[in-house]
Length: 285
Image (cartoon, rainbow, N blue to C red; front, side, top):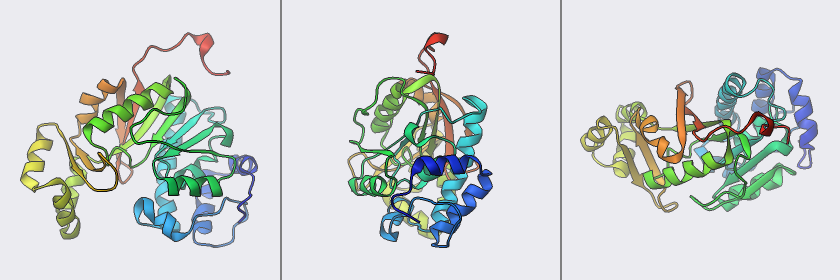
């Protein structure tokens, strides 16, 4: 693998590959095995584990599951041809999933942002030519209104307080085209129940969110339960009832379209509630 690999060339080769083959070469490359396709290098293990505690093929296998969901939902709800669509990977980390998006989206149409300087620096180094930017948590994004057709945020809203969630969602709604699609992962009461069945996670999550009966009572009332950690302000663990997004994301000018449960977090599908522009203003600009 080569740090200076041309991402445009990677995209053109990847477009000719079946998605399963594209995923397979990344699993092999992530473990340091030789592959037939030039790919951007993976960061060192100490960088990889920052985002989800995994490295190598296990961390890329998780990314591949989300890629499949994004591909399927974008084809069904936005356009079957993703080549010209503009994508924002919000909370991209070191570009774990961003790398896989190179099959579906042209690199010049991909933007990636994160609040962690070390992770953004890794993305900039190993995905040369792809626009990575450091942002402030909950701050205004450096993009105009209606800039993107697709917005993906993996493992972001499972960590934000209610106030920060609404501020962040409002900004993502602003930069998404009215006929675009947002795919945002969350933790719900089902995930919380699974943690409670395992001793290790149960002790840890009770230390963050509080006593189980109080959490369960709040979830039963349709609330979002948040427990702060020390990483960033308003950052920690957020668990919400199944109907919380549909009941509350309207405050951020978003309509919930549905959800997917074939991922380790629930994937919420949403669309801005602003009026769609006239037909002559759509795409092709």
